Amino acid sequence: MSSPKTTPHWKQYNRLPTKKYHDPWARREAWRHHEMFSPRYQLMRLIPGFTWGVAAFIVYLGVEKV
Image (cartoon, rainbow, N blue to C red; front, side, top):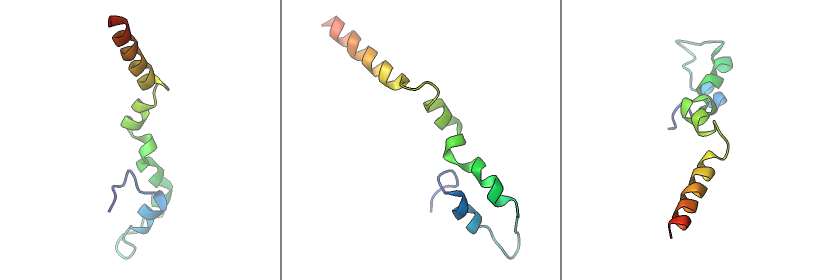
């Protein structure tokens, strides 16, 4: 079973217990658990191309050293 952060909202909504507890707003609130809104995802996409730039800079420093 996957975690709530990687599960699409309709699957989360379908997993809610329907007999004891039914939240009519659960489907509308499920977007908050999407992985796109996690701090890790936002940090990774803060500056596009940052990881490629750092890698290219390290290669450049290695070539200059030789």
